Length: 77
Image (cartoon, rainbow, N blue to C red):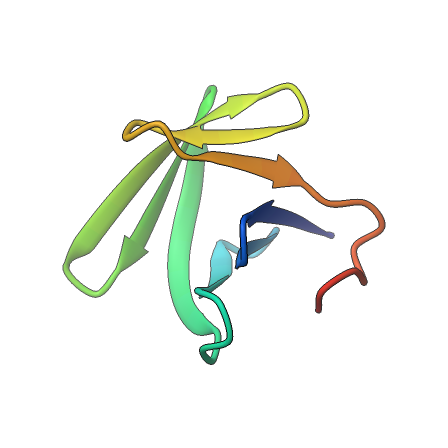
């Protein structure tokens, strides 16, 4: 199973195995790791960590960015 989120032209795809792909605009997707704990998602990319709060219909970063969940999953692959 996977979940896809969009914020503007940026996309985040989460897979059940703890792997995520993050794509900013037209750039190539970057592979990163993530894990969920309660209502939070922690994404690790190299030495950087980003935490997001799970909300109805999407996720929000602590900096205020809102990522909407995309249905069906094949949109903006």
